Length: 307
Image (tube, rainbow, N blue to C red; front, top):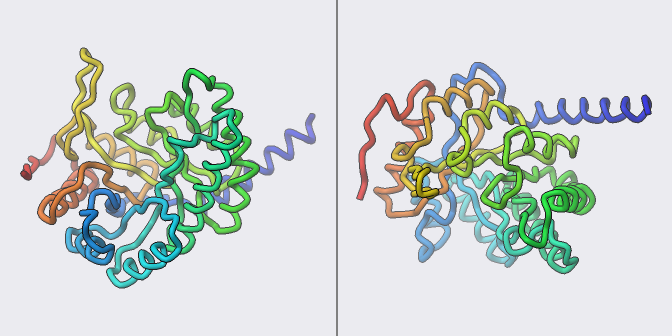
């Protein structure tokens, strides 16, 4: 037993050392995180090059793409990103909700794995370093225990080898799937892999109804590979969330920015809100600057409303 525990300790120690090397710079946090936009926020009726240039003109340095099955289209996206100067920093897997790893149906799991393999290869092609992945769904057919054990098993045995080969992080996200409901549990889920290639994609808006994003940030610490940014106005009595533009909801941006500074996070933050025209996108980029600039939050500056 002692030998087994020692091996586990050494494995975890090595993984944490690699994690520290791969993660965002841990310093005095004098620089703000880097701004990115989600591909769905850009007009879908325009060529990718036009969309990417629109994002750059609005003030974004990066973009989060979604899974692309067609190799020719994937190549075109890579070329458009290079020509525009916009960095594709991550890929959002698009099949995890329809085909959760936690399913008892082998065909559902096969489709989920196949989609993640495509997403990981997309990321490698585009120069992205992570793929957002919701690992499991708890529902009437899938217990919490099964969601945990099944997803852990498939990630470890069927996804992690490819992620390690391609040097792309599987960034698991917490969302409204009745799974990973607290920061300590989320941390435990990530730590169980003892690998720098499985980390956390933290979405601050997804927890704001029942928790404090700044608490999750401090607990997850250097496990955080990427951050999604959104805002909600809370109606606790009615049990509802109303989507709001950044800075117009109940996220405490002063405390969020303070927490990001404490853990030294200066990686990518991606806006995941409704899309709009060029003026709207410029306003979103300005809000990210305002609310994520060190020491500034929604109690300090007014917000310019856009139509």
